[in-house]
Length: 177
Image 1: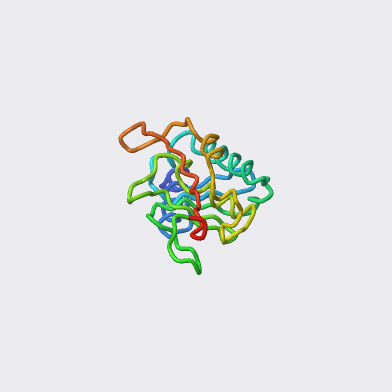
Image 2 (image 1 turned 90 degrees about the vertical axis):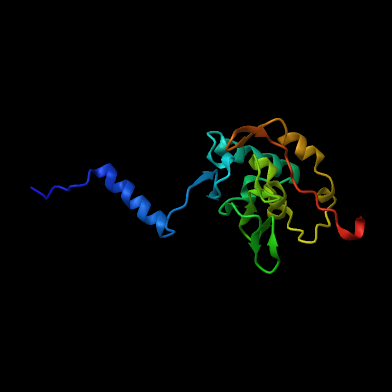
């Protein structure tokens, strides 16, 4: 007969998860098809029951807009950061970037946005699909169709329901202003 533990099995598992989280070994996240989504944000929308479906719907709308497929996102990691800006290697701080993986801020003007559609995720999917770091493709100039596809969804705040205003991040090239 083996020794009996003084800690119940499920409590031991919870303790192990807490220890790993404290060491940076575990992060809350989901998988959308073949794409990992890591959440490093306390924004209310990241805790909503419909968060996984909303991420998938936002990615699907962005892929449709850019003429991409799920293969363009297979194997990458999307990280939602609860900071005003994310560090983009070689580019400095930004609201989002794609360097083989996608990182986006869940904040705007120092406050959490109310929904994933209000981040620059759809913009960064564009980089994953077409590249175009110089934003020369004319699709960067007009996201009305994409914003319309993302419109009409609920938003979340710590105080309760909030407006979800899609912000796919139009890039107005300086030479075209």
